[in-house]
Length: 312
Length: 107
Image (cartoon, rainbow over all chains, first blue to last red; front, side):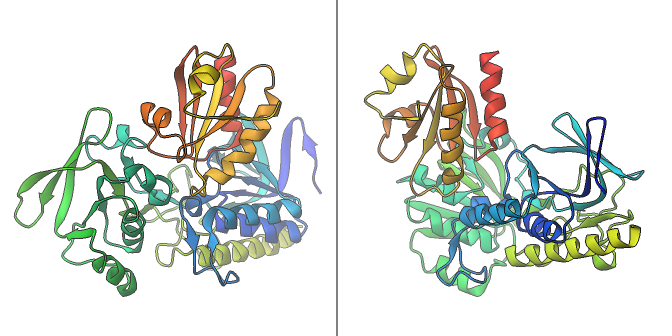
């Protein structure tokens, strides 16, 4: 069924992405006896690698550290024979079969593909931001909060992840200002209550970050009230960005996505291209949970198995 | 040779005055993503034995040098050559990425 032509490796399925969706798809695909390659990326594991304790993944009554959960999923996928490439997906040719996927200067061929590239941090896209990522600009309070011990920071965003960032930071920073552009927060009530009851956290609504100030490190921000158009400067040492995520669909030429970048799904996790399937946050604009991503990964792998049986 | 442990008191001797390039993994026990990097760093230490020096530095126990090099995010991997940092890699990355960073320097 599988052979090597020249030095091009052939697979039944290539899974692109190594979060819960990709790794779960790999577990199901290999257990269905499909020759499976997983393009894990230079930074593998997805968004859970940037979290601390995950309390809502079933099966862990005491919670589990996000990175530990991902390492366990990867080991499980390896156990059944998934092959891994720890490099970033470059591009794919989905015009003819077998599909061709380029990674790290090599080409891999496959009868089917599952896109499970998830979503990445959406940055503010204001001046002074990009060059200061890792120098005061962060999207990972669990990783970086320690460096803001006895310092002042802002957190940008109004959802659950912004609340989580603010609460983690409250263990270290002296003063946290939560800046949100709308009239009200959209986080769950339980998270909002935790934030509102924390004396270190102040909430500023109807306000956006206009620019991030500082030479090499962050020294302040310029804020703009979007009701009054008034601007103000604030001296702070860190900016934690939690305004959501952008689906990683840009590199997939020929695969249809909606106006926000989410890959369009037909029934049964099919994309517009026969043989190319999708799972996880790259197509899911609604649930965005680790456990739903894992579920989508399982479903996509079952569909791939079904599809390949039809081909044989 | 396995990987080393650097501290504020021996950093100058071990890293800055080293004849070989030195890979330093800045980490802390509370940092979950750092746990992914630790085994990779240990493997790289064995793989590049004799060509580079590889070690870890706990930022909790050693406040001086990490802040001198502006470490505000971990895991951060810095590669030092002739007493100065020449490459910075922020965030947990794959072994291949680290290998590439090292190979670039070794030429």
